[in-house]
Image (cartoon, rainbow, N blue to C red; front, side, top):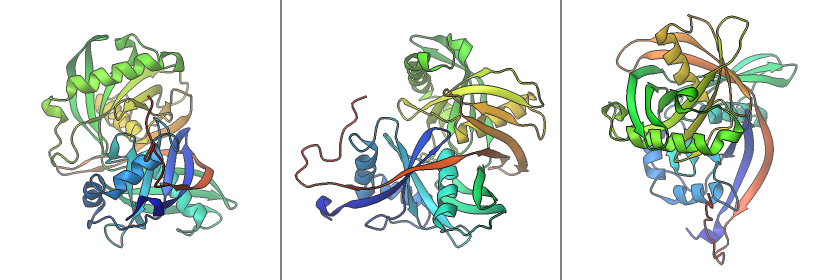
Length: 339
């Protein structure tokens, strides 16, 4: 395929401030029978070139996120999705799942009544997820998703960092592996003014855990490795449950503007395990820009792949539509990342 013929239609959304660029159709078929298999093929083919085209400057930016809509694994789902960011393809993206659920209903791909709930079922590389869209008088009121089972992987792992000393971190799986660290332990506060330090700390924590046995997923190398480092701090909260502010640093320095959907699920798994979050109580989760998700455990799944089924709710909004092209004479080609 000649790159000059590429015309990629996109629908851009944000979920609690975090961007998500939806590509409803690609000019070719990504091989594979499941979303996980398609991710493997996408990482090495023309799909990766289109990822770079859409995430890199001048069409994107260093913190861009998006996804390709692909066929479902089987008729039990409405469609599948492959998630991508500046470093490659992730196994999960729950703010993207919320954006996709909203887009599917707004576009008419999945029909919804004017009032009530509609489930949008999506196959992603780490499993099958559901985005539940709530309608109120013909408008989308909110969207929630049921994540893949989340569970604690390891507690109190010591990580040596160059600039932040020895840190104690907890690991949890929620479709990807997250390291959780109290921000105060690293001498940080979750504020935009501390962003550069937070990114540096995230880099150093991920590097320090790279060879740790707990970072190796039992299902194999396609799912293993530390995806994100979550720095969290408590907030005042008068009702039941907990309120925390967090920032998630992932994919070699990207910063989640939202409270992180899968990161919220990982935090619920850890807080439920420690008893800090009682059964049925919600974690009111705020981001570095004060956007908000509410997360709670709604079910428990047994077996080796079991854990807590966490529901995370928030809102996603469209911000634009576009058609991106690549001219064969463009010296910058697939673009660049300055930061």
